[in-house]
Length: 178
Image (cartoon, rainbow, N blue to C red; front, side, top):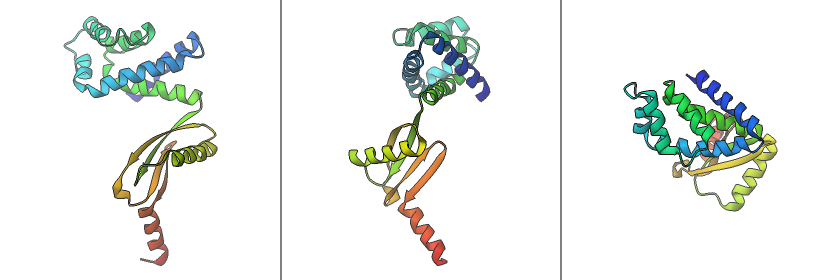
């Protein structure tokens, strides 16, 4: 299933590149909106995936839901996937397309979990450090988890940078021999 999503996303990305240098980012933003709708309405995605709904009806449902907010090409991409019985793969294909655009533009996303909300200054310093480390533009997605006690956990590029108090205490305990 993942390979199929990747192939659809790759085809859309190639088409976006043919349309012009700003097109991939524009389409990624359009698809981001569509993805939010699909994730917020799993029943809608189930309807689009239902074998009882024929391809033409799926196309009409997508046109009614997204016709005003998506460009013709992006809507055609979603319709094509749904007509071919790949509606369930649409969210994954959208995420893969966005990943391709981000990769080409050297943009990385970091998920930050901290015990307390980060100040704007702390976010700025963290962003600068992560950008120096990755040699890319970094965007932060911050969450608060009071259970951490202190410190923060950063996930970027599939790596986890654990600077939580809990982890440091565990490391000290191991060194002491406890």
